[in-house]
Length: 157
Image (cartoon, rainbow, N blue to C red; front, side, top):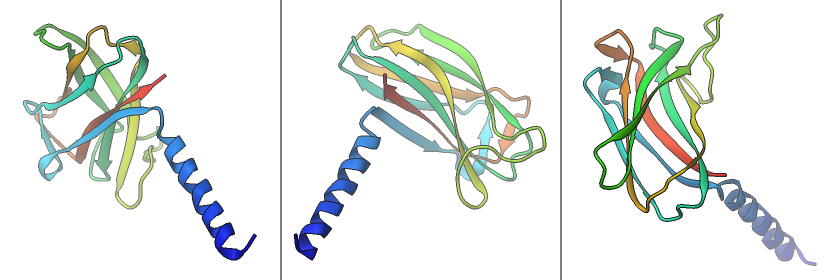
C-alpha cells in the first residue's frame, strides 16, 4: 500500500472514531448568560423534539462558570413540559462546581469550567412533539455573578 493509501485509511479511522463518540447524543444546547450575571427572575428556556417515544434517555444539565463565581455549588430549579401541556415535572438540582478545597471541577481551559450533572436517568418521553425545559437559578443571591452559560444534553440509553 502506498503513502496515499495509508493517509486515506488513517483519515477514515479518525472520522469513524469521531462520529461514533457522539452517536448517543440526541440534542445539546447552551444559552449564554448575559454579562455572566444570572438574575433570579431570568429563566433559560430550551425546546427539543421527540419522535421516538419508546427510547430511554439520560438528561444532563450543563453549567459553565468562570473563576469569579463565589460558591462551590449551584442550586437550580428545573421544569420539563410535555407537548401541549401546561403542567410541568419540576425538581431541584444541585450542581457541585468546586471541591472542599476550592479547586474547580469540570473541564475547560483558562478561567471557564464546564460541568454536567445528571438530572434524570432512564427517562422516556411518552408523547411525540416539542418538549420544553426551563432552568432557573435557585441561589439566595438575586444576581448570581460568574455563571457564563447554562444548557442541557439529552443522550440515548
